[in-house]
Length: 245
Image 1 (cartoon, rainbow, N blue to C red):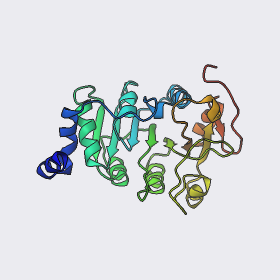
Image 2 (image 1 turned 180 degrees about the vertical axis):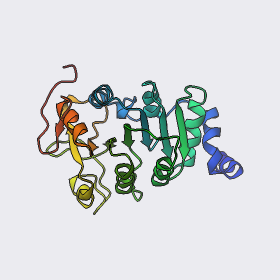
Image 3 (image 1 turned 45 degrees about the horizontal axis):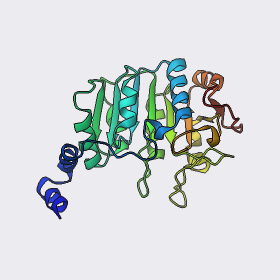
Image 4 (image 1 turned 180 degrees about the horizontal axis):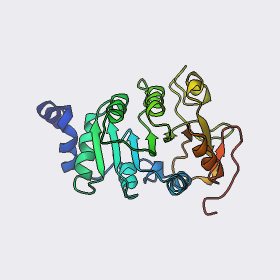
């Protein structure tokens, strides 16, 4: 009853800030930590960061900002968008003053990416995109990829919650045409994307063991990604290296 009254008084756009002050701790799912608490996923990201030399990081689906905050430790500027006003306000309050590298936005991810593409101040050559804005009836992934690869030819994209063929990694499936798998990418064949998956099976992963896919369009980048041991090309089945290797 009190929460309902406060929500009516403050509005959805401010309820998250109020919640932060009464409950500043984040809600942890599973073991917590960036990338769903997945240590091998973090190794993939570390390898990409080392081998590619990104000049910015863009995230869709800020949620509580755990991975966002981790991205900022790279020293690169981080741009992140969250559609839910409550999560946006809570995360903005939590991360306020922690890093001037983090730029948070509230809104729809395709609109955010279009604005970023038209922003002359964001003329980055090799950005890294982490796409995690998909949830039930809202699945903007195809539109996000169209915008990204239509603007940034040398972008590298990691999509969370994506099916890894031949494995038991969990992935999002919201019904016909809304499963994050290879069939979902078929209408995007004109983008000519190279696909890569984790080279470790879920038995070698930690955290909540969600699948992912890494995409790029540039042939030179694809050659670099093919040399990264934590990734395997889309036409191969994942092998089983250990996390500590």
